[in-house]
Image: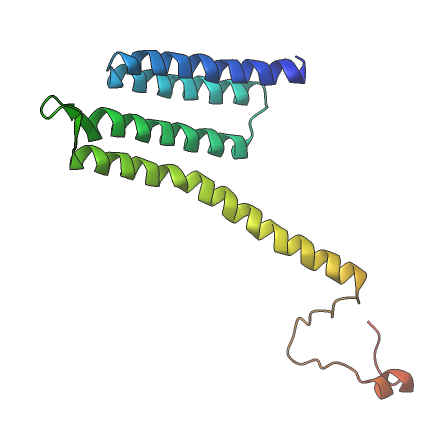
Length: 162
């Protein structure tokens, strides 16, 4: 299967799932929208695994984005309420706000893991480049019984070469 066609199909799975999520959310059916969202993510992951085109970084971004989308939805549905008197007044509910903030917090975890993994790889590659360009790294000794030879000892020829 063509690589571009795989990416288009994976994107289409997510778009259809998001459309179903928003359509049920507009009708105030949060449970049904959660079913659509979870089913979409499961189908998307299985499709990527079956075609051997699964990327963990993209998965982390998608999981974080859907988590934030869900947190915003919970905040709008359960954290904010418009009351009739006085006209245009808004009441905030602590339970809905707490739930939305908790979901937002947990949605940050995949992004933090990806950020941590990318920051770990960067210093290692920079140190490898420095070692290649500068001098050769000092050899590691396997035992404490050995000591490094001095310049005079190396020139004398009275040392063992193993």
